[in-house]
Length: 432
Image (cartoon, rainbow, N blue to C red; front, side):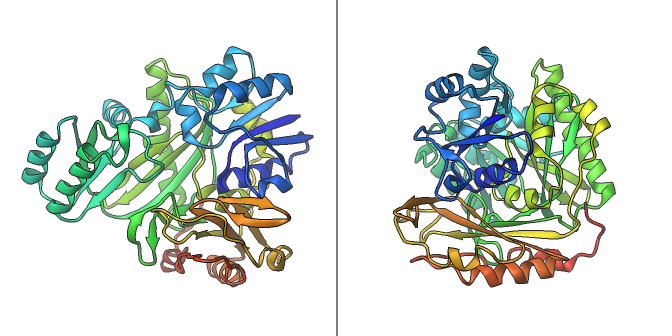
């Protein structure tokens, strides 16, 4: 098989790394890819959002399967265009991608189909939003309706912060058109977890549980980022809680979409808050999580490509009946090394040192995100640069091993959180 992966981040490197292990795959292309991906796949000089050029390439090169990493091309309808030409592609259609592309659409769908989530109110007028906030009082969460690269959510601990969030999103337009509408919702309390499944619109195949670390600094301080690290599995998710999330959240939303006439094939990410009254949805994403994927896929013992083909062809029930879906019992964590200034502005082109030193370390994988390869040197080329990923017999061993490797990496201005995975040490619940 000839496989095309679309995207350029750590998630896409993890996907390419896993796809390269499949006995079904002969050749991998990645568009546009990054420095690390270039060592496993042929990288193309085509942007992820250039749907016409990607379609032209897939037809010309007789690509057997395309896997879409980021949300933007999904929201723009890349799946619809590929399907028009009978090309196999993994990901939801433009209509189904509204589950992430429009938080308003997602919240209204959750309410209609009784998917547990925070109480909310939708506004397209900033003055009305302010009046609601002053009456409701903080803590509140203010969300831009559209896509904002994982940064369109402002958790306001005070009423003043919530009012300022309305100004930033709706009047200053820091997220552009994504802020034409906002959601103001109750602030849920508890621990967060990430649940990712793949689905063919009827059956569901869950991946292992994980927990992301969104804030830029230790102790969950500072602004939200695309994710500063993750670990899998999370001891917060027992078998019973996992089943409850699948039954009350995942199946309900997929069934709800089907009742709306929307066929959903691809990966579905549910950001979950584990509250005192049960799991509730914080957000849905219509693709694999980043950096959760980097912590999950090293634990997957099965062939990911076989499962993805079953989703694309609508045979997931048959696949589950005929195949075991196996997981490494060990823990895995991913620590993101970021550029100075991220998630704000940052410089590019800093040389990365230490990669050769940790290349052959036992149970350590380096997933590249914002990198490029130039004259046999790796340079920074984004906000999140690397995901240093390590496996261990338990979470503590995985943490120790991964941070020991991370200390060997250096580029000017590099920063990373020192507490990825440490919350897991507090829990001893059975994990999934």
